[in-house]
Amino acid sequence: MNIRFFNAKILTLKEDDEFEIIEGELWVSGNRILYVGDGRQPDQILASLNRPVIIWEREMDCGGNLLMPGFKNAHAHTYMTFLRSYADDLPLQEWLYEMCFPKEDQLTTENIRPLEILGIMEYLTGGITTSFDMCYFPPVYAQVAADCGFRAVQVSGVNSFGGRLEVVEENYHKVNETSELTSFLIGFHAEYTTNPELMEGIAGLARKYRSPLYMHNSETAKEVKECIERYGKTPTQLTDAYGMYEYGGGGFHCIYFDDQDFEIFKKRGLTAVTCPASNLKLASGIAPLKHFYDAGINLAIGTDGAASNNSLDMFKEMFLASALAKVSEMDAACISADRILYMATTGGAKAMHLPDCDRLAAGKLADLILIDLKQPNMQPENNIVKNLVYSGSRQNVLLTMVDGRILYENQRFSIGVEPEDIYREVNEIIRGMK
Figure 1 (cartoon, one colour):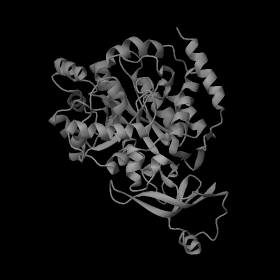
Figure 2 (cartoon, one colour):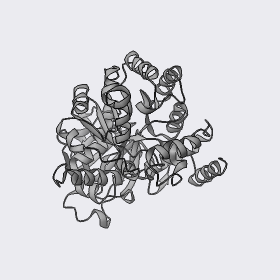
Figure 3 (spheres, helix red, strand yellow):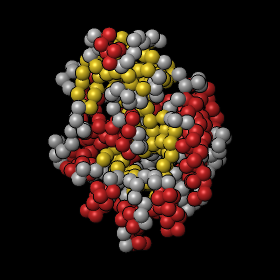
Figure 4 (spheres, helix red, strand yellow):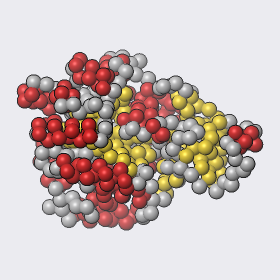
């Protein structure tokens, strides 16, 4: 499908982490961005593209609103929508072992589908075009995402309580072969849920498939303390000693790091994914974003699951990531709004190894959103990037496009399902659980 967006403000990446806003047009052909620029002299533009003419299926007047890259949710458990507001106000270990795991044991390849669709719907309303999931039944989520037209990267959540290396390897092939929208990377749940033999096996799979490797890493002080007691190393040092990061990767949460941990992340080219709302709600702590940034380590932002957040909202995460970094350093200038927005878009694309989804530019995949600037919270336009980070809201998302398809526009979904049907199914699943 050929779509022409015109009369738009367009967020482009000028430097590695500095944004620029231009005024003009963005053209989409199929699943790729064909052109970004001022749109003047269209005949010359067509000639430069070696196209005599383009038949537009749709031409959209953006009314001066903002086109920008879709948000990349760099750590998620999409299926956990069924635990929203179920297991709140508890410390992490009790929340996980006594409340979440028993309910998750009742999930099946059938009842998990509407839970995942519900999560995708919430992503789309908030401008999230990709999730980086640690999911139950990865092939099921891959098919659900492909059917909805949503881009989904997954990482294995195998641990000593469930799953085998053979299944991880099988999922690696199944998910990567499901659709161009779906991919799978090697990983495991966390050091504290995984025995040494299984961790060694996971490291071997990462080397076999030259895959980046990800896990929950240093989320609580207790986790790090007990890992040191067991192995004499932090989770980062332990997993590095197993040879897990020969092809990169990273960690989710990354709150309690020492100097050697930072050095490993820098040396291995790893990404630290911060989940500020989840970490606040579970009283886990505040990730040292300035230290990562100063060390030149890639940063990304995730929502975590709806069981611990409880919303899947990148606007909330951006504000919290910025404010928490400032207060933890007692320095209001320690990290800029541009850098936070970069983490939520380009940094997330880097974490998921999606180089064609990192910015709006010709040749990139058409994963983009349209932001309504004509609402009170986005005025005046002193600085649009700062408005996005400090006062933006999902109410500003007018349109979400993934892979050249408009999946959400003006509060209506185009993903092949009716919202009311999903809401009914989800509530029936919850009522049917023990």
